[in-house]
Image (cartoon, helix red, strand yellow):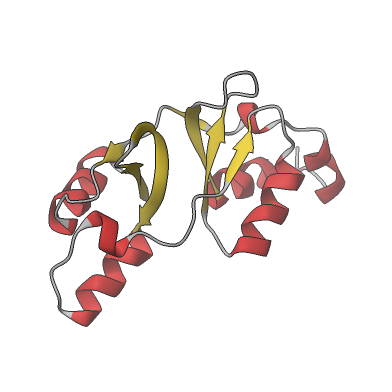
Length: 134
């Protein structure tokens, strides 16, 4: 069964997200982060806030790694991380998640527990596509 766009307004983020979140320190070499991504077969790793380890400060995704390779400069996870972390509640809808991804030009959102606000997983644009495609 294929979902219509309007059907994504009824699907919750918790139903499509990946639980757990891989996190690294901002000073970690981007080469180490790339190795972790390849070994775990993920497209993004959260960069921990140096002052609050449980709160992501940035995200390094596969495009950030490709950009660093293209520039030819070794760097750290903190230097390669893309902009601010965009979060979404696991209670929210996939429709809203897709809107956030487009508005902020992000392929990954950090999913937070609605009660505690702590990260509990990641939602990728591929997760949205998979739900939409059925």
